[in-house]
Amino acid sequence: MKANEGTVKDVSLPADPSSLQAALESERALVDRELNRILPPEDDYPTSIHRAMRYSVFAGGKRLRPILCVDAGRLFGAEEQPLLRIAATLELIHTYSLIHDDLPALDNDELRRGKPTCHRVFGEATAILAGDALLTLAFENLAAAGPPSDGARLRVVRELARAIGTRNGMLAGEVVDLETTGRAVDVSTLEFIHSAKTGALITAAVRCGAIYANAAESDLKRLTAYGQKVGLAFQIADDLLDVLGSREAMGKAVGKDGHQQKPTYPGLYGVEESQRIAELLVAEASQALSTYGERAQRLIEIAHFLITRRN
Ligand code: GRG
Image (cartoon, rainbow, N blue to C red):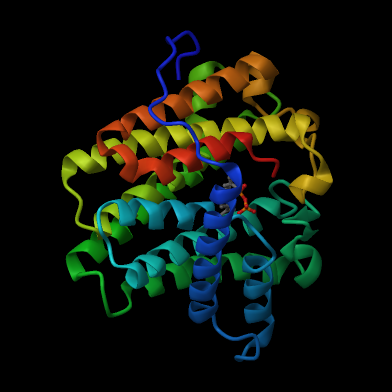
């Protein structure tokens, strides 16, 4: 993102925030029902790992990645139930990354989603295994028989594996984040960290919904632009919340980026300019979907919500 780019005219105003909240709540409930269906019951042997997996998945969470996947799939007329299966998979992967990110060897956090972190409740060894198990279950779930078609499913598997891997994916972002902590970084390194660590999975979420719906390459290109811009804006908002938010609202420690000397947008640009960049990215993301008109309204509203959220 170039901070000095011109302003892009927004294509759509966000609708009434309370109606968006209601819609997000109902989509969240659908995702939770699917997660409950997919996850092994707590009393399945060996129970300790199944309890830990369920504890972290159902500790809360906005379910943004699944919701983005569902809304992108709906834009191209996908059927709901198989779409939910892919959407739930995204949340399994996201929760794995949070459990591992919170471990003593990484961020060493005690609170996540307003509750004690997985390793604080179940011990470090079980938390590592619970993260591994969620990641494994995610791909088992995708590969399971049933719709979407084999071709679409294979594309989704590849898309997700790449999004969380070491070449521009989540792991790449995490590694560069670790290696640059405490050091001055330039804008392009910071943009790489944020886009890979957070943006890649968000971009994959919208792309997977569209791939499942058999969207054309030109549509995928537009959704990729939307996902990349929204993903970066989301992480900038996360950086800002670490400075401006509260532990109560966030459900996790705040102010840690500064203490750990992590590279962040507010650290590099200051608060106001970071807010401006996030807003510009959201306007550009909305613009990328302008060709769909009203049909893309929900995705545009979500993009706005992501940078105005309180947690
Ligand atoms: C294999 C050791 C090992 C690590 C896995 C940890 C990791 C790789 C990647 C970290 C990725 C990460 C935690 C990025 C931060 C993204 C972020 C802003 C998370 C918060 O997302 P929200 O706000 O959270 O959607 P909720 O709780 O609402 O789901």
